Amino acid sequence: MNGKGTNSAAEAIPETGPEVSEATVRLAAVTRTYGSGDGKVTALAGVTLEFTGGTFTAIMGPSGSGKSTLLQCAAGLDRPDEGRVFVAGVDLTDLGETRLTLMRRDRIGFVFQSFNLMPSLTAEQNVGLPLHLAGRRPKKSEITEVLQDVGLADRARHRPSQMSGGQQQRVAIARALVTRPAVLFADEPTGALDSSTSRDVLTMLRSLVDQRGQTIVMVTHDPIAASYADRVVFLADGRLVGQMDRPTAEAVAAQMTHLESAPC
Ligand SMILES: Nc1ncnc2c1ncn2[C@@H]1O[C@H](COP(=O)(O)OP(=O)(O)O)[C@@H](O)[C@H]1O
Ligand SMILES: [Mg+2]
Image 1: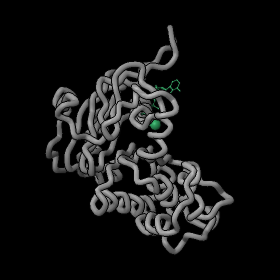
Image 2 (image 1 turned 90 degrees about the vertical axis):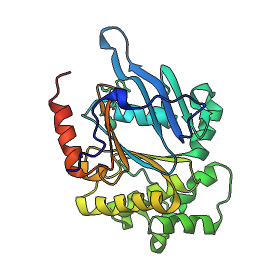
Image 3 (image 1 turned 135 degrees about the vertical axis):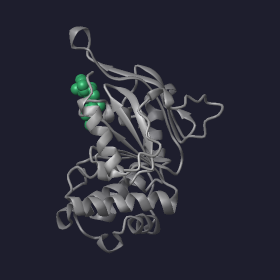
């Protein structure tokens, strides 16, 4: 355990105004509730947080703590009830549907636990899909380059059924990166993979940050996965309850045990 930078006080996370922020992604007092009346659930309760460009952040917290909601609000897939979300300097909460769709298409990458590939298309066709949807004819070189980035240049002509789970997730990551987004969001990207395949995918994500300066924000419940990140932020009951720089799996696991046993 290093415990370095361990801090369980949400107040320790600096609140920065737009004038000082160079973060690629910034959430300011984001609140998201679902339902109404007795059935009302506060999934996020005033979360302020930023993700610096070229860094890898893991988001952890007990089940139902708001991790997926945070990611979806940050990625413009969901709209907060209150607060603001900035991606690459653009306030997503100000945008109408058309411009939000364009932001998602061009500046934001997202991968899920399930790979969501088109089964009838080859790896290179799946990767080219976002460019086709943007009305562009993809250049062979841009597809090849992004497949190389995820270590799959030799699988370009394979269909999903001809690839392992880890390879399919790499294709999904390549597809998310083909537009060269400002940020890649990943919701439990290794949740459906065995531990050795997970490690390969995490090493690849790490190298995208180190080699290409990609900004990555990943939700995970696995302390080992979180240890690949530069920083872990902890959520509980829709609130930020701590963060840890240079996390080790042991320190993250200890913090999670603490959160899961803490009374609400
Ligand atoms: N579409 C939805 N409708 C109603 N409640 C939701 C919806 N999405 C999430 N919630 C609730 O919001 C809370 C946070 O959910 P979520 O962000 O999925 O948590 P996590 O990803 O940490 O497990 C949970 O109580 C969940 O039941
Ligand atoms: Mg979730």
